[in-house]
Image 1 (spheres, rainbow, N blue to C red):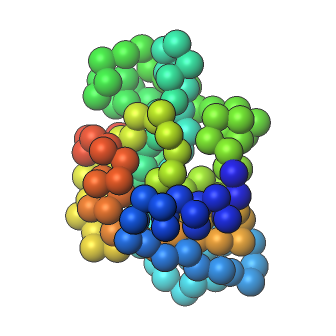
Image 2 (cartoon, rainbow, N blue to C red):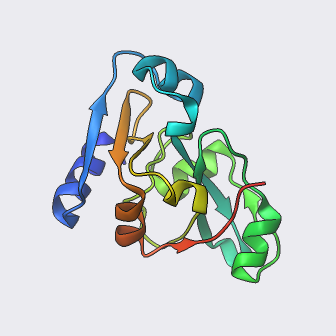
Length: 153
């Protein structure tokens, strides 16, 4: 997948979100923060985990937070999942690490940290390292049918 796939998904699924085209690379929260001039805690990151039986799990946290695999384990009542390698992330989601959007990834169990839900609007991966996605956390929850649970350390 790429940015075009994400744009098509947003239109097809009726997602209320906007894709931001960036001049520089925005492959990390720090880079995105510099590029947009927003504080790092305004951003989210979508981390790809692999659970039992190769289950795909997306953990969405604020850009300044870290994910706890133990908290994911408790939330889903499974053995602790492992963070996907960059190659696995592309294979499983179609997106490179740093560009993974919080929406448009089928068959993923989505866990959204409550700190994310406390925000009105967030900016996250937009499908490539030159795009960002502006979206409300409530829209992420609605579209993904995710679960709000603490996954940050």
